[in-house]
Length: 323
Picture 1 (cartoon, rainbow, N blue to C red):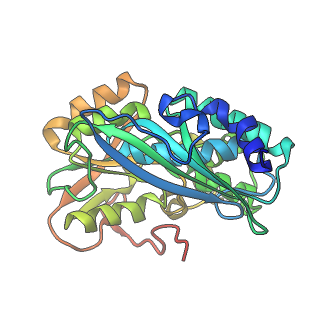
Picture 2: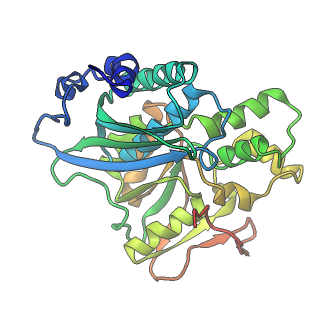
Picture 3: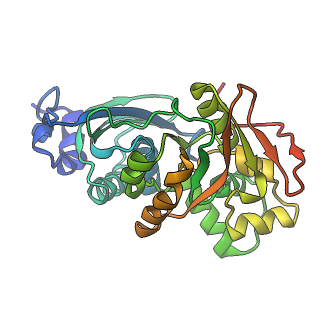
């Protein structure tokens, strides 16, 4: 006799388990086929009230849960291979599960990262989705955050700060009258864009890399600490969307909030000077904008942020912190 959990898995998640190694979700484990590549493993959880709101669309919650992990893989130069899923649910609500599974399945297909297995549990607390994702790189090909060297350019993909502004809108801390701008900012918060297409370029040209999840300023500090170096950043070079620029110019948002707010899921990397142009060309060819915002320097002090006049900007907050 099947249990409610078995029925839930068979109905909503078995169709997502397209990899033969998932065994149709009929076993206690899955098999990830061996290859001549290294396996890169990353895990992230998203929790109701912390990473998403209770009434957010289930599709966007599913997509965010998978995409934050795909962002980590991309920053390591890895190609997605599959993922396992743990769901902590308050109940088996079909009106929530059906669109959640649909959104998750759409992204699993789009990013070629099939479901391999997982677990479902009940909880009386907040909804939680935890994903462990697997990726592949050539032997010893994973790009670490600990190999930046003085002289490298500090480079970031996309734009910074939109997700933090979208969160502020949803939380009622920021009023945005233009509906298109409002929805664009909320979209950046709810559904990040993992730079999977940039993975090979990061692996080929970058010396160190990580994704920007907790805020550009804080994550840069982490990368520098891991590498035993420092950096000097030109704040005017940090890529901001027209929406973010406008809100900062109006005094409704701050530069500090943009670089410390988190949830960008862009790639932060350091690229040797003689490789930057090639890196930028490849990034352009896959439709991802990359911007050089400063340089790695010798030393172990915190990265310095300079304004357009060369004066140091003191950031009161560097990153989002869970604790």
